[in-house]
Length: 113
Image (tube, rainbow, N blue to C red):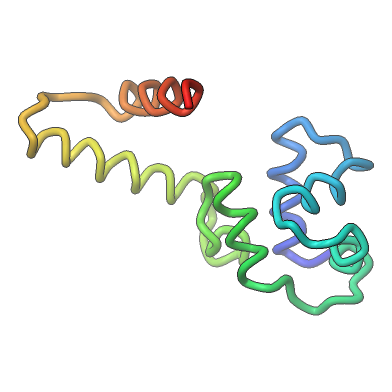
């Protein structure tokens, strides 16, 4: 199993998805067929297409670079996004808000969509 697939499997496992459900979950996230996802796991496909990596990265809120092995932390995108939002809040005069408070607010907002 290549590094990209290992990282994807790690995210799936962290999400509580059982190994027998990996292919179905990835089929749902990417919109590609079950057989195409199976080819990733069987090694029949050298690389996963970028648009599919992007779908997986967006779903798990990680950077594509993390999936490709170019970044060590799956949270690098989320951390950068939160830091940017904290800075924007300060610029807007909202006051000091901690990244963890902002993350809690964002999760609440997403839950209410």
